[in-house]
Image (cartoon, rainbow, N blue to C red; front, side):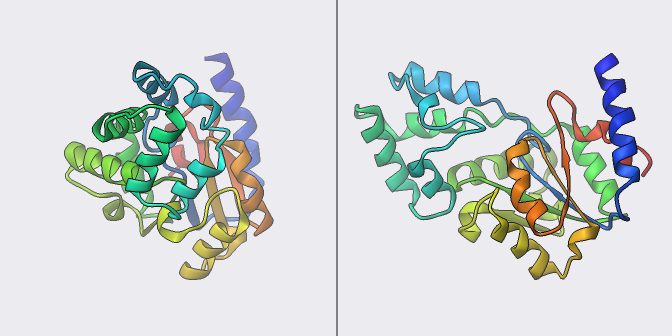
Length: 224
């Protein structure tokens, strides 16, 4: 409770110093969608792929996984690559199940907040992801709400679809350019601080949603 209060005091002052925000770009995993990387790590370990963490975490990614996240390789090549890295003939269905294990749920209160915010701001989604995860989390959201992410956001951007990835500046510039956004009036929210370099380079405002806090704790939204 004390840390939460300190967060609100510090960030309320910070947000009040910002230029007027008209546009908000949200990250997905850890911001809108609950995720747990340990679940995928453990699922692969159960399959005998015990060093998955050496290849990918929330904060680190090797070139093979990065290529998948920018759409340079397809699902079949990804599955084959996992088999090669793991050094064993893992079944495709087991690889996909383990890969998707990190995807959890969409808390209803977050979806309700987004629906409210879209009446006051232009809201966008910007996610480093891949085609397997994309299908899985869209299906999960539809199961929970009857909606797709495109029903909530003005436009959604996925790294594998645009062939660009955070934290590099071009993906942020793409969102600005395609939607005629003023960078100074645009707030980018992410739970991974290393993703801010590109956003700040193109002039966006940034907000670090440090776990375990959620978008419901952001003072700007509490005033909305």
